[in-house]
Image (cartoon, one colour):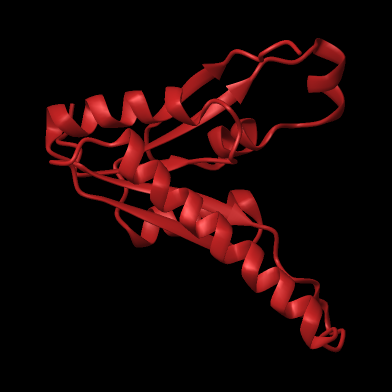
Length: 151
């Protein structure tokens, strides 16, 4: 196994973040790697050629992005050991393409994602982001099964 220097954890703010971070932290400790915690936010609709909306809408979106970035920073602070280098990234774009582009830019050696268990019919009709990443990834991936909490 090659030396792992950069680990990326792709998160979507569900309850499983702790599970993903436990694996990332353990591997980073073992290899002395840096952890990149990435969340991909939905792209703004202006990119399709529409005029930007009213300023108050843009201000609301900017505040939402600031809050999401603070959450990512808190994840780094609360789930990653102090002696491990980590960085929180919030980037707008298409999820799969953005994760792959950032992984390439940052020279990521391992990508960690969570996978949800769904019924056969659900999987047949809707492909998950994790499955799309598995198909397109050119780097090793660690998929962590997410146990859904019943309400």
